[in-house]
Length: 615
Image 1 (cartoon, rainbow, N blue to C red):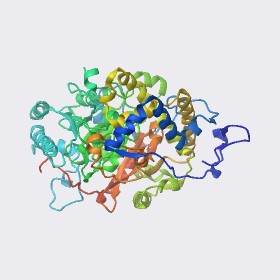
Image 2: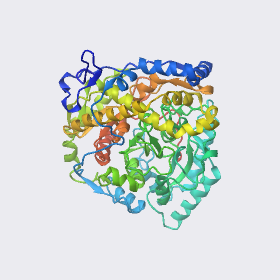
Image 3: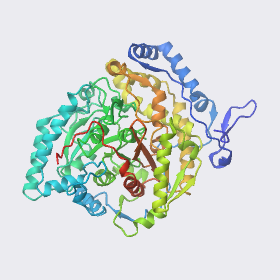
């Protein structure tokens, strides 16, 4: 990035102190990542090279050098102090919101959130002969059907079971779940049905079918992280906190959803259980790592799923599969009971068929753990009051930040143009303003994120790797671990210094704007190479394209949401991402709801869709 670093003769390269960087001198440079694309036997050979003591050091050193990592982290003076976890200045209270006291019962919080939604209109789905645009069944549609006797959770459960079995037996199979127990599903649905028959449903979420990603504990199911062995070395004794909160509301859990092994990839490729397929085009990836959750929601088998997002792992698959993906602020949700609960970039959050469903589930699962309340000092938990008479005026005052050169750095301008049209619709309907912003050092941000999540993942997995489990990881995972294991303490500390610089740039941008808008991904859903199904795939170039716009949400812990806004010429979904201020989920959800409504006619029914309501 021109303007943010200097090199005096005979001196090492030094970054300009972040407060002194001249933004007018910054020039956007499209990232050029250099890494081989390998599948099949070639991948096996490459892993052997990466893991060999001498050759491995040479290969990783070459990869890091080719991608400027050594120059950036080892050969550059970075004057800022490290930021080991996200640090936020105090935030102004959000406008037009309803506070949800996070220490109260999740049932009470969900009820409060429900009152903030526009009144439910059953005619949208139930009482019209005309064919509206394609609409997913929402949580309130199921609640209406249960309360009015149209159907019961037990009846819907049989449709879910039939759908899961149908997709699993298709050719090619669509393995969305790694653990599924039809009898347990029937038992949960029967208990919910009885509550409705007795007139005592627990909440609006009672009888709602939700899938849980396989790196989040959901007792009595095992948590494998989509490996073949992790359940043998780590037993599940109780629900993760976010799952327990949903169970308290009467949710029915479908099972454990497929994922990219241990979350160390963003395509969703998994040779252990089969690779989940995109319901809009079954020869393409869902994106990952929350591949199974996205496929389940997109295909209609559930309204919501819970995933984890450490590097776009909720937003990327949500975008590629044409659904909503909310990534909460770091520390907003209690991660206790997730395999990735010790890192500085991950959150657990919902993938949903609609923004209103995301609002309801977010209100149930949110709430920081005690330690995070002390260190992160979260702003009060709240949701947007969408029935407030001030809602339109609040939208009118929204300023949207757009870094135009970055915004259009996509594989096909059709992606960014579609996102731009959605923003134009928002501005023309609500008179929002778009402000040009500059975000320097985006390549440095990507490098700092790779080192941060990579080092933290390696720290978690290295003991198992050394204890003889190395060959039980997929080849793709072993490639990543070999690279992550090459990072030094200097690399890690330098990355945290970069984190502080990037946080400064974003804080400065948020002095001018309320949200930052980008395409969610730089490409639409990539094709699944046939050669990758058995042994896996390593393709860092495609991964970088998928992750191009999502990293600030993780390295800086900022909230973000992806909203479907259209399709490309091949019928593949395109998502628009909104990035918010720290703890600003309510403001994001308000803008996302408006965009969703404006772009509703652009949503298309996936080619692989199962109607579990059977209306």
